[in-house]
Amino acid sequence: MADPSEPGARASPAPASGASELSFEAALDRLEAIVDRLEGGELPLEDSLASFEEGVRLSRALSEQLGSAERRVERLLKEGGQLLARPLEDSGEGS
Image (cartoon, rainbow, N blue to C red; front, top):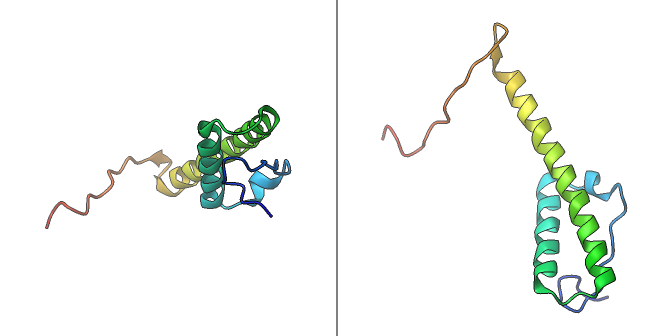
């Protein structure tokens, strides 16, 4: 079986639900690999289109996961009905 990261390898589109089944990190790695292949310019048009479609699905899924994580953090920070903005601690300060 050919390595899909090779320039001449045919891209196999993932199933529509594939993006939602991957962890955030795995989906991000997959998206980065797709971008690298597309930037290489070696794929035939149909494979480029299939890869682009998969990349769009992955990008949307990643965006949804980030939005969900942001909402969870905001809920955790709410105290007394108000959202409290707290600066992140810089590990280099205060030492």
